[in-house]
Each structure stands twice: as C-alpha cells, then as structure tokens.
Length: 212
Image (tube, rainbow, N blue to C red; front, side, top):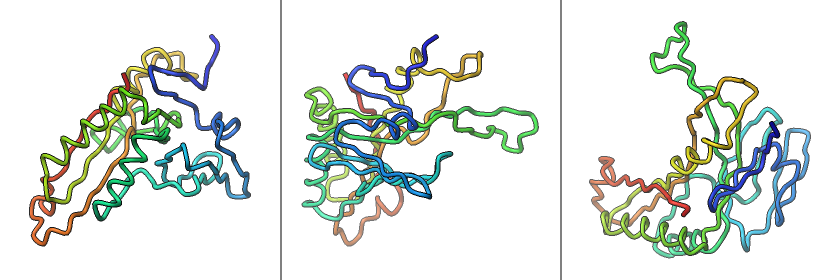
C-alpha cells in the first residue's frame, strides 16, 4: 500500500511533520540549526498557531507564531486577531496518540503515546469555514457579553473523519488515534472590575469547527 504523508480532506490539508519540514509549502522556508529547525513564513497570507516544541528531530520553532493559545486584552486586539482568522490560511500542529492500556500501567486510564505529528492547515477565508468561525465567535461573545472568556475552537471531529481513511502506522493492527492539541484557544480579557464568572471558570466555551 502506498503511504501518503500529505492528504487533503474536505477543506483541510494534513501533512506529516517530517514531510512539512522537508518540503515546506509555498510561503514557508525551513532553516536547519544544530538544535533543530526554525521555520520562516510570509505573514500576509498565513496565520501560524504553533508553540515551540521538541520533536524526535530536535527543537522546532515557527518564527513569529502566536502559539496555540492566543490572548487578547482589548477590543482592538480581538478585532485584529479575528480579521486574521477569517482572511488567512491557518496552520496548527496536532498529535495522533495511542492510549496504552497495559495492566502494568499505574494510571487507570492508561498512558498516552504519540504516534505521529501533523501540520494541519485550512483556509479561514473559505466561505463555509469563515461562516462557521464567525457563527462560533459571535455565539461566544453573546453568551459572555462584557466578561472575560476563553473559547476553544476544536477540530477533533474533522481529524477523526480524516483518520478513518488516511491514518496508517507500521503496525498491521488498525489503530484509532486519539487527537491531542486538535484546535486552538482564544482568551479575551475584559476590563471588568468584578469578573466573577471568569474567575470561577464559568466563561469557558467550545465550538467544533466544521470545514464543510
């Protein structure tokens, strides 16, 4: 069976990390360092939400990345970030994991082992994706008006759908992966003096992003 490391699913591209670093897409370049890799990219069309991380190939840094958890402290910062979300191609790093249910595991839930890492990308300006993100962000704001809040934009369902046909390992036994870091987070901090719902953890929202 031919192994493909770069596959499109609906409006989402999934590329194995090694392949991405070896053959970066247009607008990206990879600098090899003694400690690992530094990835450069044009920011006019690309929005990278990837934290610095350690891989089996060394330390990987996406220069100027905002990271997976983005903080905005006022309406101007929020508006700027939202505009970028809805007009650029978004890049995330996700991990396909396997839960080890060994009887020797001290953790009753089992230990999680990373099988593969992928760079996932999708076009935030695509009409359907843009509509879904706008709807989710507007719902969050209306439900926590005037408060600080945290919203998680989740792509787990899209990756699970992709994995049904495309995820393979060297193990002949079919593995259904668990997905780690399958999304990104927006944190908004208002200037409300007594922001009790946020302090008590009530202002957390999640919406599942649909790419079709």
